[in-house]
Length: 64
Image 1 (cartoon, helix red, strand yellow):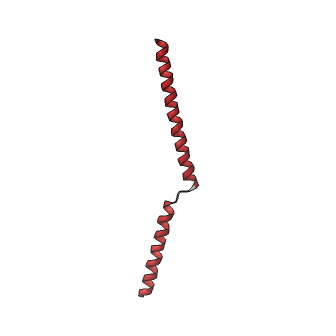
Image 2: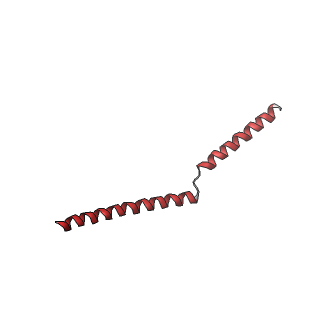
Image 3: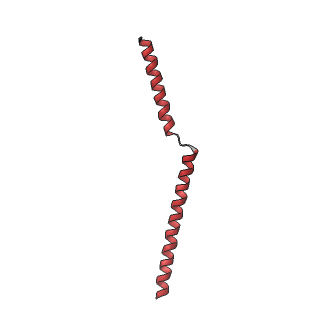
């Protein structure tokens, strides 16, 4: 291989790696939707915990 061919091959390999790394960092619509679902489920879980605590408190008060 000549020097020019090696340089072109190295340049193309570098560009390919750059594109691959950049592509991995982008967040698609499915990932965003998944994160929103996770947030919603977490909030719902917190609300259920609060409701359970309120029920326990009410039951303790009723026993008095």
